[in-house]
Length: 130
Image 1 (cartoon, rainbow, N blue to C red):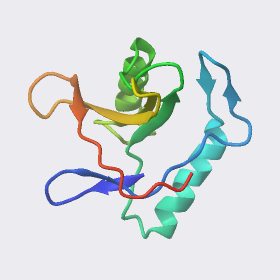
Image 2 (tube, helix red, strand yellow; image 1 turned 30 degrees about the horizontal axis):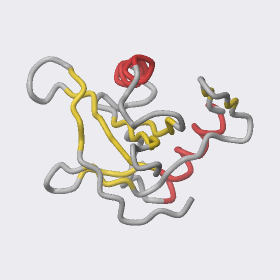
Image 3 (cartoon, helix red, strand yellow; image 1 turned 120 degrees about the vertical axis):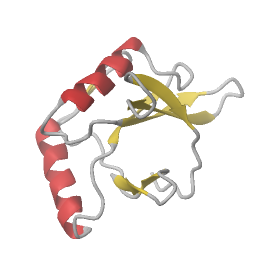
């Protein structure tokens, strides 16, 4: 969750976890949607409706942070979801880099410059408290 600053940069202020009933496996992930919706609503109210849902984040523990076909489908589904109210969703991916360390990558599904497409974003991690 977060906001767009005056330069239209994405600023992430809150990260919502997978939830207590999330299902994890080496090749797939299913979040606890009900729990996540409750957390998004709670943060939205606590932050005086200043921050909003921006998109998704996850890890690629066995590969780099390049979006997969499933990631692209997820971005499309978020953009089309009336409930998400997020027509240009961001996806932050933490992947295993070539130097055997975690690296971050981000993309956004956008229509700002023509037809909808996936555009890479630069990532600057300011604070990380896992």
